[in-house]
Image 1 (tube, one colour):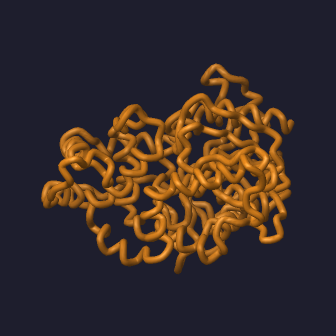
Image 2 (tube, helix red, strand yellow):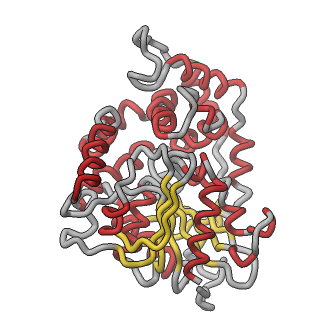
Image 3 (tube, one colour):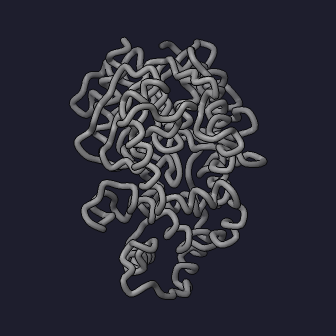
Length: 393
């Protein structure tokens, strides 16, 4: 999968090097807002049942003030090569880690909500340079990890943009801006929906996809007892998880007034998802994620002011027609790999259902892990992506 000779990093005026450098006064303002937050109360029997547990949130905020070092996290993020480039109406921020060896495979990895490019810190280098981690240089990838439009360091669209339109932005980034003739895409959460759209709408340039979530649906619905049982269980699972999604898909602007300039509120809104969607021990979110990991991701939303525009993707999907890629039932025909992590909150359907939506050529049922696969189980995800791509060569 060669890159066209007409493009080389730095030769295109549209591609601009970028580094993260948050002003000191912005960091001080966030810190002062945490100090001044008017803590209130929660039900005596609360735990996490009613939402983010206040006791843990206070503990996290105390660490945020006295133990968390944004500059250290900023330095870790900046060890990668960051760029910005115009793709359609979006000034896309992306990490590009050029892979080892003579012919690394281009790999686009997409995050979701409430995630960011910080999710990928443990997988970028092993994917790009497997020989540095005891692997085979033949498995190397050119890794492209963009911030979604409206998320993090990418610019926001003028109005809500759904995942299908975002797939078009990323297709432009990969082919027209970066000059790849073909590439493979991987994603979870919204990244999985974007990746599905790339495989459906932008083949053959997108020549294969790897998913760790099943977020799209077949227009004919479930068929047979096993699929009907899955659909019923899925709906039951979502009853207590669906509130945020409904708000962000219908009235995201109203939510934004509560969250704008409210670091503790943003932290609570995001933290709940990392607790509920991860493969954790009991109620201990730190059995899957460290405080530094949680806060680095939260801070990206705060220092970029992107909480509002990041929520727009839910509104955008509703306008695009929801979870169905093709009303006629046309499936994704590029080779598709599915990595099933057992604590994925978007419960996977039976394989029979998935095969009506995708051309499944690789299927892995993981021993552990949840929704944030790249953070929770990076090695399992890396090995599965490598194994899938080997089947394509």
